[in-house]
Image 1 (spheres, chains in turn yellow, cyan):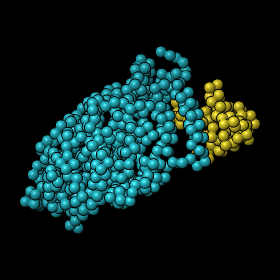
Image 2 (image 1 turned 180 degrees about the vertical axis):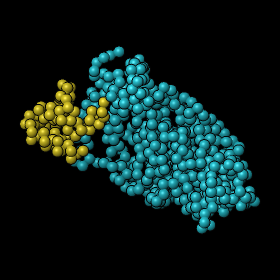
Image 3 (image 1 turned 60 degrees about the vertical axis):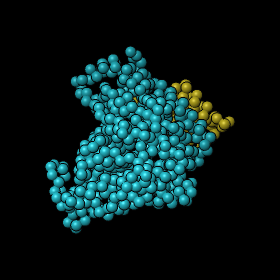
Image 4 (image 1 turned 135 degrees about the vertical axis):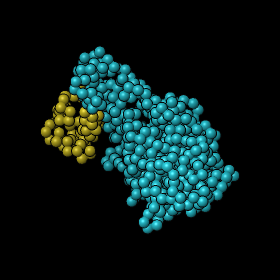
Length: 78
Length: 480
C-alpha cells in the first residue's frame, strides 16, 4: 500500500503542478468521479496541515492518496 | 419511499446477495417490491439489533459469574476412558465386540485403558495418571462425564461444538459472546483465536457468519511467538503515530461521508471500526501479545511447547480485556493431533503430558492473579474416543471417534469445583446419567456469562437465530 501510494503520488506530482488539480485527478483515477466540495475541503486541509506547502510535498501527497486507496469507496463495490 | 439515486433502497451488492439467495429472474419484480416494502424494517433489524455495533458494550441479561472465556480445544477428540472417565469393566469385557450400531466400521473388541486412575484433591475428582500436574487443581475442576454430540465425524462435530450447527452457516460461540457482551477493551478485538496452523474446518470455526463482521475471531498464527510475527505491521515503516492519527482522521471523515449515502450497511461500519481498532491495537497489542515480558519462572511453568505458549498468551490477552480466547491444540504435522486412530496409548501419553503441564500452569496462574473467579476455562474436543479398539496391523491399536459419551471439563467462572457431573454406562459407551448435549454446554457457558441463550438472538433471513437453535438447557447442577 505504501509503495502504491508513493507511485500514485509521484505520478500526480509529475502530471499536475496545481494541488487542486492533483486532488481532482486522484478522484478521477481512483473513483471515476469528481470529489464533492466536502471531500475537496478535507483533502486541502490534510495537504496543508502542519503548515505544509500543498504543492511541494510529495510525502504529504503520498499520505493523502494512501488514504484514498484505503477508503471504503475503493474497498467495497456498491 | 425515496427515489433519490444516491439513496438506493437495494444496493447492487444487496441485489446480488438476494438474487444468489434464491430469487430467480421471474421473482425479481416481487423481490424489488418486497425490498421496497420491507427495506426500512430490514435495515433497522440489521443495525438496530446489533448491540455491539460501534463497540459500545451491551449489558448482560443478568449478573454474570464469568466475564471471559478461555477455550482450550483438543483437536481430534481426546479419549474419555483414558483421561477422566475410568471404566474398570473394560478389563472384564476385553476383546468382546460392542453390540449394536456403533456407526464405526473398523471395529475391534473392548480394550481397557492401560492408565491408572485415582481420586485427587479434597474433592476426589478422578483422573488418570496422564495428568500428574492437573491433579493439584482437582478441586477447581468440574468434569462433565456425560457429554454427547450428534455425529462421530470431525467436520460436523467441530462445527456443532463451535456453532451449534453441523453445517458451516452459523456464528461461532466466540462471535455470539462478542455480540452479546461486546469488548472490555476498545483497543483489542473481543474474540481472539490462537493456533499454529489451520485446524480441520478452519476459519469457519471462528466465523461471525450473519452477525456483524466486527465479531469475527481474530486468528493469530502462533508458530513464531515474537510479537512482531504474531501481529503484522505493528509499526508503520516511516510515519509517526501523530502522522498516522491525521491519516486516520481523514479516512474516518471520508468513510463517514461515504456511509451517509449508504445507511445501514454493517460491513462499511465494521470497516471504519476495524481501521480504528487496528490503529489502537498497534500500541496495545505490542504489549498484550508479547509473552517475552513474562518472567522466566512463569514461561517455564507453562512449558516451551506451542500449546504452553498459547496458554500463556491466552492469559495475557484475558488480562487485557479480550472476551473470548480460543487456543487450539495442533501440531506442525497434524491438524488434529488427538485423533489417535493408531497407537492411542502412546499418543495420549505425549499429548496429555503437554496439555497437562500447560493447562495446570494456566489454571494456577489465573488463580494466583484472582482471575479464575471470573474467567471460565473450558477443556475438551469435538467428541471422545471408542472404548473398543480400532485394530491396526502393527498391533499398535487405536481408538476411533466416539460421540455418544465423552468428557470435557470446566474450571473457574462460576462453576462448581471438585465436581464430577453425569456418567456414561459401565463401558463408557453412552452418556446415561445427567446427559449434557453440546447445546446444553453452550447454554451453560452463555448463562455463566450472564446471557440467556433463549434471549441472545439475531434476526437474519426472516427469523431470529440463537447459538442453541431451538435446543439447550442450562446445566444447573454444575453452577456454583
